[in-house]
Image 1 (tube, helix red, strand yellow):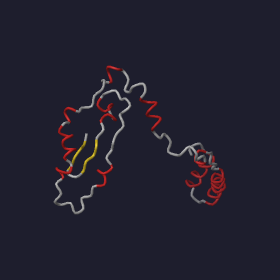
Image 2: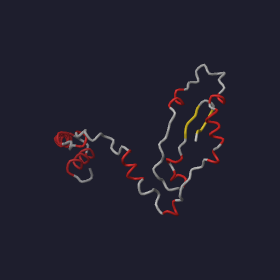
Image 3: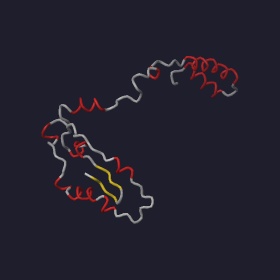
Image 4: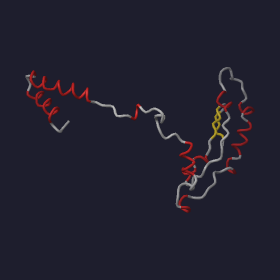
Length: 147
């Protein structure tokens, strides 16, 4: 279903979000997004007749009440998706932020050098500080369980 605002036409595909309408989600049909809709510019288009240009989309919009999303209600079937939906969804959906061939991000990254520097610096703070509260905080950071 096209959503229209003068020159802007966005296609809404309710069959891809049937659960939002409390209907069982199945594998949606392939969608045909019209790339030329995103190439339209308002530059120097002050006298353009958008009704004429978007006439086909407006006619489709006028049929919206006959083209409602159809499906079985979730409460009748008992499952929010058809049995074939999740395998299909997982086959087309990237589930990892990092590509699987990048192994460095998944490897153990030791923090030992940083922790050694920290542990070596805290005793100097304890020895050199003249404020009891600073020495207590440094002592707790090095030996306590609070940090």
